[in-house]
Length: 162
Image (tube, rainbow, N blue to C red; front, side, top):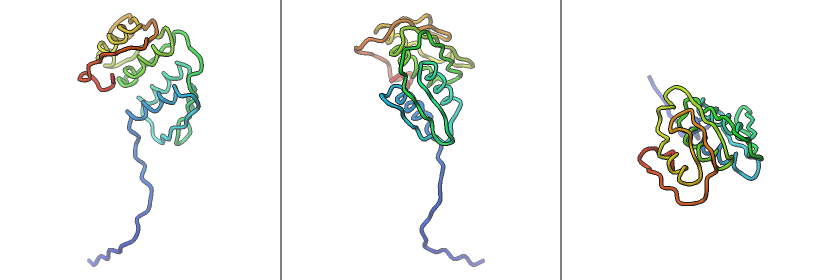
């Protein structure tokens, strides 16, 4: 078999799945931004969809097209929203302080192994700065808003706390 390899420019498209961690953070930042944001996201996951639903429960507007999420920021305070985090630990850990920053009361629930995942250290720091939590495990209710201040959170439990 004879093979000839020619030196020619390569071309084409490669679709790389988005980092779930980056997608969570981008959604949250867009929901807290001053104006609408478009996030390029051709592929999603259940965890990202859960974060989008929770941000919608907090008052953001989120619509999906084939290759993007369009996010309208949280405009008003939703009183006592229920945030169903599904089985997403990232959603729970990221949105506990977000909810406490934007509304005075909120409720969290989840399923699977999520109620067993650690959030106590994060809740402890939040409770030292203006909040109270009904429990360290799901389901739980938060009361009070976060205050500005120093937050001491261990970084060896989960990087999601930071």
